[in-house]
Structure formats: structure tokens, C-alpha cells
Image 1 (spheres, one colour):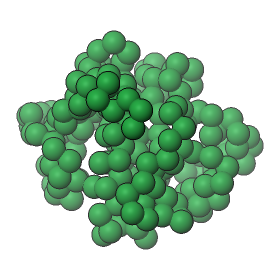
Image 2: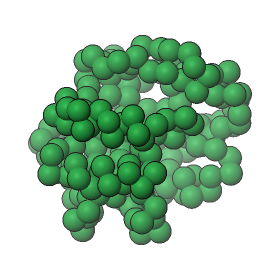
Image 3: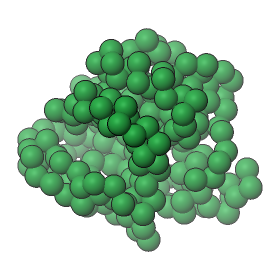
Length: 202
């Protein structure tokens, strides 16, 4: 964790912390979920936070993949990859940016749908926050030394496609998602990252 707060006008990309937690919990309580995986339970997440907020926040930055295994939509369980989340903030909680990777390679296991995910709460949509937040997030990800990141979206999710292409995303392929995700169609985009040394010290 670099400790930096990335800023674009009023929009900030911050590391999860107690100061931002009430807004995050309020969004969960209203039914919003940071996960795009069907069946994720906001009630379970709220219970985890209320039980031990510091432990929950610590799991948001898990470079050693020490967190619990991941349950996929079909119920299968897979090992967690290293990863971290940052939160979008404009004076209020706005959403999340999520990153996962395999150390030493840009490749991902077949069941992992991209390096990057993002979600903006309903009240903050239509402000360009996903586009601007991803732009900020890519600056942080460049420090990891990967040559590129891949993002997956659905063919009918035009808004997400615009977010990705506005940040330099190039469509690689239209493909069938793995069986764990019901073999639905997806679009795979790639965004090139600058060399890590180019962003060191920024």
C-alpha cells in the first residue's frame, strides 16, 4: 500500500479506513453491493464489519492472499489471489475499485474474470466517476509492474464498455465465460500500463 491518496478534482481514490466506513456501510444497508457476482450477501458483509471493523478493513488490502477462499457463482470454491480495493470518495462514499493478480505474471486463472473490477453506488452514477476512478486506479496499478491489465464486461453493458475504452482499453475478444459463471458471453478488454519506474515517486 503506497499510502497515497489519488485526486481528480473533487473525486479521491482512498485506501479503506475507519473515516470512510460509515458511508460504505450505509451503501450496503441500502442494498448496494461492491461485488458483481450474483448471490453476494450485503447482510453478511455488514455483520462482518459490525463484528470486527478493523479486521474487515485489513482484508481490503490482501497482498499475501491470506483471506478466505472465494466461492464462485456455481458454489465451487477456489483459492484467493493477492489483491486490494480502494474506495471512491467525494466527501461521501461513492464506490470501489478492485484489483487482483498473480505475482510474477500478467496471466490469470480461467475462473478470474479480469484484473480489475469497479462499482459505483446508484446515487453517484452519471457523474463520470467510474471513468475518472479507473483512470486514477490505473496510476496505482502501474506501480505493480504488470505490462497490462484485463477487464471483463457484458456485451450489453455499454456504460462499462465506455468506461474501459475511455481509459485506453482495447477489445481483445468476445468469449464464453467459464462454466462457473454459466458460460455467458463476455467481452475481454486490455489496458496497457506504463513501466513501474515511470510512475515511481509520483
